Image 1 (cartoon, rainbow, N blue to C red):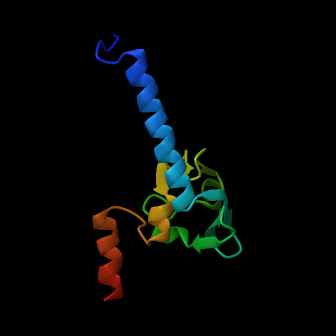
Image 2 (image 1 turned 45 degrees about the vertical axis):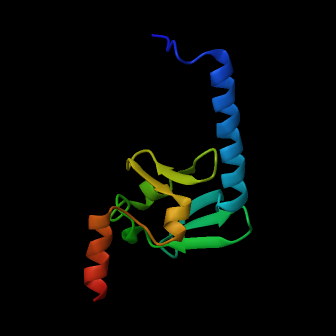
Length: 117
């Protein structure tokens, strides 16, 4: 069903605004160029477009903990580079959130804080 309030002019303006927001985000937020599972170190490795590399053990991440090496290896970088996705594991992560140390929901993260205490 068509939205009568959304005419072509409004739609073009919304698309232009979204593209501008994406360009700003691409300039200031970290973006992944590639990602893979390194079985020898048991780490998810993210190569950022800036040239930096970030890695973390999968057991830190909600939805990745306990997953097989084969499933962890099937990581995909989202087209924008701002996320990682594992189809079989139904797991998705924001690259900026991972870099900030957020590996799951508040409840998941609280478990790690309790263990560290």
